[in-house]
Structure formats: C-alpha cells, structure tokens
Length: 300
Image 1 (cartoon, helix red, strand yellow):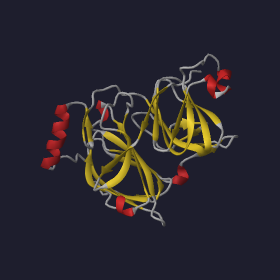
Image 2 (tube, rainbow, N blue to C red):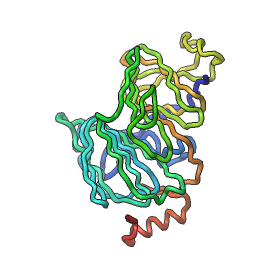
Image 3 (cartoon, rainbow, N blue to C red):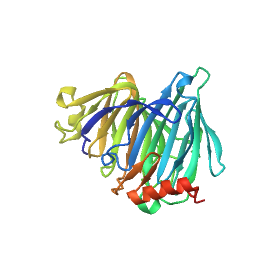
Image 4 (cartoon, rainbow, N blue to C red):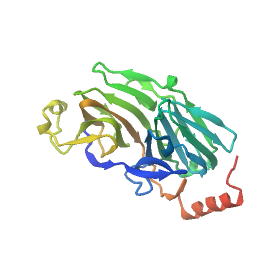
C-alpha cells in the first residue's frame, strides 16, 4: 500500500456563470494536465434565490460529458433533442454531449430557498468527441449507499467501492465518483487506483489529509500520531489534489467531514477549449463554432 501525497490544496473561487448564477469554481478553464480526464468542477450553493434563479439558459456543448449532482433544491432541464426533466435532492444526471447538444438548466430552491449541487466536466477522447449525445438520469433511490462499522457513509455514484457499483455506466473516462462522510474524530483509509488522477472536494465539516512525505513503509505506521506524518487541514470549499498512490487517508475534525472523492484515468490528449466546447485542435474548435453560427451544430 502507498499513501497518496497531497499535491496541493485549492480554495474554490466565487464565479458568475450562466445568466448571472453565483457559484464557486474549484478548478477549470486553465491547466488540465493534473486533473485529466476532468476539466472543471463547480459548486453551486446558495440560499438567496436572486443569486441563482436566472439559471443557465440555452447553451451548446460538444466533446465533453457533464455530471450534475443535486443535494438541495431542484434543477429543471431541457435540450435540443426534446428531452425534459427535473433533478431533485440526491439525483444525478450524466450527460454525454458528444457531437453536440443545446440545453438549459434552471435551478430552483427548496422550501426555504436553498439550492446546492455540483457540476463536473469530464473530457471525451478524440475517437468519442463526435459520438451521439445521450443522458443517464439517475434518481436518488438508485444510488447505492454503504455505511461502515465506524459510521463512515459512502454514496457510490459512478464506479465501484466497498462492494457497491454505481448506476452510471459506459463513461469514457471510467471514473470513480463517490460522496463520502467520515464521522467526527474518525480516521479512514480509502483506496484509489494508482493509475488514476484523483481529488477530494470538501463541502461540509473539516479534517486532515495525510501526506506521504513522512514515513510510510508499513501500514501500521499510519495509525500513529499526527506528528508522525505531515498533514493538511482542510474545510468547506477546499479541493485537495493528490499525487500517485493507492490510498487516501483522512482524519475527520470535530464536526466530521463530507467530501466528493473523484478519480479517473488520464486521456493524455491535446485540449483545445473555449467555453462549453472542448476539442483536440484549434481547427476542430473553430469548425464547431462555425457550425454553431450556421445552424449546423446539431448532428442528431
């Protein structure tokens, strides 16, 4: 077993998106190599309807997959293929934009005005950039949950973890995407395949992630005191980017800690990116926007 080093900690930044939605961006629209195959993570969390009701009106996507996970409130969506629906608390939508789609996402708060969710963008490899668009709409009841003996709870959205397999399937990046809660004062080791890039995004409570730059020769050493290992204390709105290794160790703080743990196999291809369209070359990117202007963007 090898402990994943903490490469760096990033604080998500306030950002305006859509028609004026206030959210926080953990990463995106910058260097993609460290996060490959992922491109962007947004945390849209607000208790003031004026800050989110304008939503994300009609806009295009090509060459990526978008993963929306709702924790509070609802998101109504529609697209150029005639699909319509609504996501509520605990629901997930995995949209493969592929060759191109126009869609809109309009958030609404719960009965006290709260809205909370995440959107993650995953890249598509070159041979799937122009694949047919599709949706996987997953209601909360279909997402497996497992609770360990110490009270640690995990929702498995995509991939396999602790004997459970998430309902989203056939995704190019073959990711693992889990929602983890570790109770106050508990320490937990979570396995992640060495070949994957991985990050944790904290959205509740706080805790410490062990760093592998201290002694790590045997597993038993990792249950020692914090003085035995370098640690990174992180809280709400923090993203922890990990280096290579096959497990992550977290020590929950006084209120416990809840975070998304996401990993995926790097695609390792060139990225040409502007706004909601991600291709491999500037020529492909220019063609996409030319087709958009000419009304030839939608292929199916």
